[in-house]
Length: 88
Picture 1 (cartoon, rainbow, N blue to C red):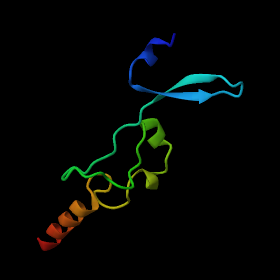
Picture 2: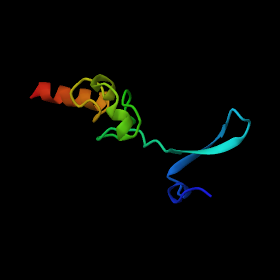
Picture 3: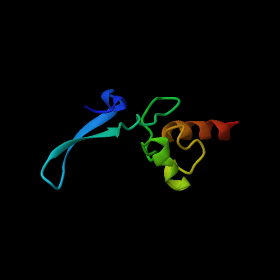
């Protein structure tokens, strides 16, 4: 019988074959949802999916795009804001 914490569906269940030929059940935490743009709701590119402990291991340049509003707005919405700021 699995431990109590593994009985919920917050863990993804995968079947793995061991070197001895047995098939065992492995439990892995699910990945979080993809990041979305704060304005239009489109998926953000170049922003990795992962749990906080996985993201923390990445270098800062790999965590989000290196531009203003990177990781917060998609490129189209950011471009629109840059144009608005330039017009003022």
